[in-house]
Length: 545
Image (cartoon, rainbow, N blue to C red; front, side, top):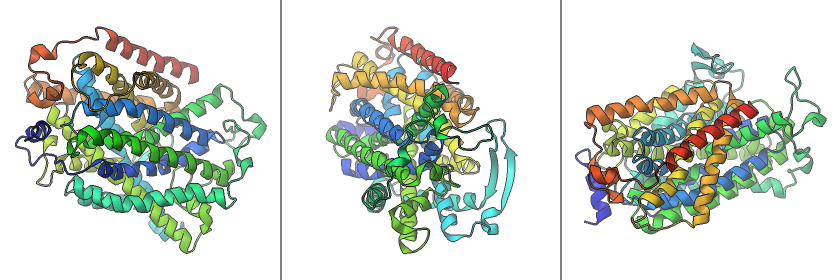
């Protein structure tokens, strides 16, 4: 048995078959091919909030994500026996300096990824209902309000309606598809992925060729403005003042949730046949695909609809984005082409849901194996699927699916994602200092590691400046959810495990015993970095609030 295989088997213990090495980088690429579909989640909200510069937001954001990926590729290679993505690999860097900080990395990554299930199924349900049921039908209008949440954001409430019912059915179907492990998931997503990436590219490219993209729809190049009554203001009032910059930074903040997300391709390191070569290839080629989609689709979307069109009903909340994109390629508002495009975009959302469930459930699973999260999550079934983690994902997202404003859920989730990115981009240099002796299958150029650190602080500035653009309670709600991991970890570590980490947690770093674990070489630098990141977020919040 190879060392990596042994580690995987050991991690599984008596909790099931363990994750199995059954895929190559191409399998991970297709599992991650749902990430380009995440552009559908917030393209309407960003366009209606930022206005003319919204397409630039996407270009900048996906370039940031690509530059960050080099750090993630290096640290993933340090852990050939772990699944769960960059947060798990980053937690191993921070745990030497604080047991409380390390689980925050894993928790924030899960809180960032898991809402894709609820938001994606909610949007897919909206597409289906919009295409099949008249707007005034009782099927679309009935709703039972369970709880009012106006204190967090005006109009926010928990409800049951047809969107919830259809979305729940979609979630259960995705769960069933992934019950038989990553190999079956990869095979399904290879087929679905081809059928989904193609229509996204059609939406991005065809309007450029058929003359639907009008250059006047990009003018003036300044953030949108509204008058006191909430109506669209004269374009002469669209300026790059502090309010305008706040909207632009808010757009960059929310776009990060989608545009950085191809880092999920390294969630499957412990399921690669050859993690030494597959890890970098998976994230690199996933990144190139996302650069293409996140550049052409928003550009054509704005060029075709214009600002007025992007403010249309159903664009901001995303429910009518599918219909709008179908019309962009010549489908009008009905007919065969229109219906075909809507169906293909529904598949795109389902693919994103499958990508999220595969990645987020493995984050929970590895958190259970490594001692960060409850032990029951470390179970796998006979096909190597982390079913208890998947059930946890499903249950949590059925609750989120009850929320009336998915964009608010996305914004809270992205606060967690920004914190995760900050911790793990800095984990790269911490691993270099503390674990420089550990072999690296792929090593990032020093300049890319430095760029990653710089972007970690840029992300914290976006968090402070842009989070509350999406609701006054966004940042505070996120902080509450982030803090929840502390009692969860304390119970697991001190009650379940008696104050000791599972032996396999740091095996890949060649750390053996408590004495080895306490050896640190970075001194106060990690703490100074944390303090600086918090300071950047606070200053940005004060300037742009």
